[in-house]
Image (tube, rainbow, N blue to C red; front, top):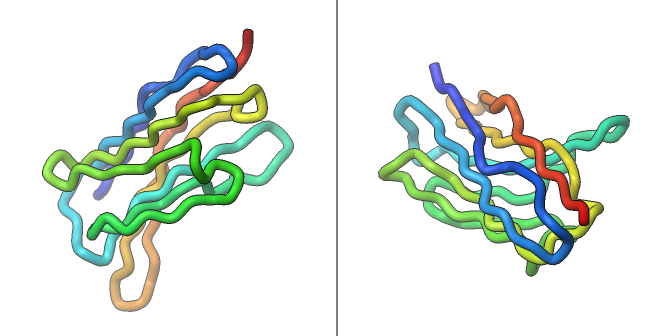
Length: 119
């Protein structure tokens, strides 16, 4: 059973930076990947960035050039470096681990970490 825990959220001023961390327990296959999402009240959860086991990354247009996702497979960690933060980045940020087994996707979500961008 995989468990996922995020950390690193907090209050930051506009233009500042934060690094979110996500640790996933258990063992992983090359068919796994980890994504970062965020959600604000009343809106759908938004996919921000994802990274495969092999390190291939993808980004949403809204964060491309400002956010960087990275992964340390030895530590079962994924990180989201967030730069040039804006008030519109205020949200709860979630880490999602998923694995494809026999054509079926299995998702595990963390509990979320609050990021607030405000002066």
